[in-house]
Length: 255
Image (cartoon, rainbow, N blue to C red; front, top):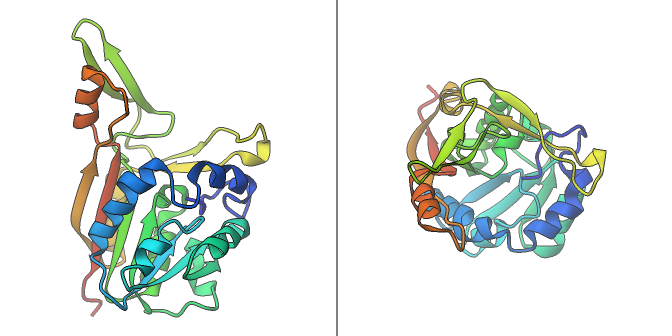
């Protein structure tokens, strides 16, 4: 979410008001119906566990963690996002850079049971620094849970829907996949300071980077979406092309 590395060192700080207006206190429709339930399923929370939400934004995940009896800490690089989260939710919210969690004085190495990236990891770069940083914060046996746009089917400015009139078929077009991309997104509120950056990486980049730091994927889910009012052809395409992906990786022995 707001850990996005834009042209500002403070992430989505320049668009925080716009983003909060869109997401709201409880999360967007996709947060509520899709992203948060998928994350909670993969977390398999136990009472008393310590959970680190990396790129927490306004903290929409926080009440779902605390209500389970686990302990929540959210980290975000945007001061405005952290201020909003503190006003709305229980839990600990800290300002910090996902690439350098060791610089956050309130955090200690090996103190968390799980780290979560809820629609945030595609907006952080470089990935290697982010995963290494999360691994620093996790105990042996800890887990990393990621919910993201599907990197195979949703490539910023390089993918989209098409329609084949002859076959009466909606299809998914992907123009680029293997090449990593740094994509400036549209300006928000007609402000140049509102331009943010999304980072596309192929799927193997995520899997191999997790493995590099001792984390093996033990579950991966590909999640479809349904648009209200879709016709037959759109519904069939929605059911065939997952636009979100969730994965869980567990640490293996570091000996």
